[in-house]
Length: 164
Image (cartoon, rainbow, N blue to C red; front, side, top):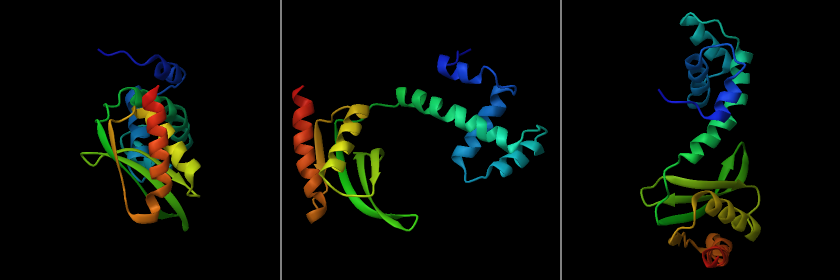
């Protein structure tokens, strides 16, 4: 039998439902586009009476702790990756999406910003390298004007971090 992470055990200490019910509700809330009331109905069909506000409290308590636990067990990033930025529409407003992708096409890290500038690109690289480690090679999207701030920031940031 496996033991729980101490942080997760502390969060679950005062919850009065079985662990599998709590985790099932939180998983459904995160994994599928369901409202809290839909989850309440689905659990009621299985014979368990849970209020939608209880499910919401479980999610608020558990998700930050689970996210930290999952990050610790995240598989290592490869030695090479691709960085790009693009302009996307989010809730009717245009935003800049900075993204790192490994050689298999899996997203390593991303940052969504309202403004596109050198500080945004630098901040993205600092957080990405801090959480995933510095890659040996980085390929930058060379699509004209969009890569200029990122290219400058990558060269400065990687040289600084790899020299330490």
